[in-house]
Image 1 (cartoon, one colour):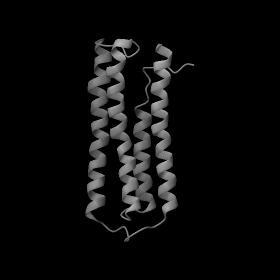
Image 2 (cartoon, rainbow, N blue to C red; image 1 turned 30 degrees about the vertical axis):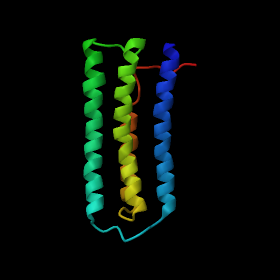
Image 3 (cartoon, rainbow, N blue to C red; image 1 turned 135 degrees about the horizontal axis):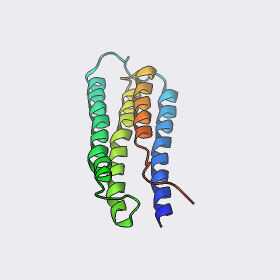
Image 4 (cartoon, helix red, strand yellow; image 1 turned 90 degrees about the vertical axis):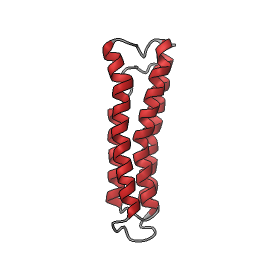
Length: 140
């Protein structure tokens, strides 16, 4: 049972990381759409919300995963604690993944050039790599 839980968690994480590559492909294929990417309110708002999302993802993981495991309060490999671990990690991944979505929205609305868009995707991918589910090992 424990090995299946680890495999499921790694599959969820991997599919979210793969989604970022799909966003990158879509955004780069879109070309320049809409108005020219001048300093607009939308890109500023998306950048601010993206930065807050990344930071909040690290805070959630620290408070609900890293600290309780370090204190010995719960063990994610234990089936009774697995649900808390999975819920915390899914919230962390969603917050991190949203940065890539914000970049895609900015790109498709014409508010971000390709470099700005790839910066959003790169930050989200780096965040996802930082939030790997290292506490559970995948095995078949």
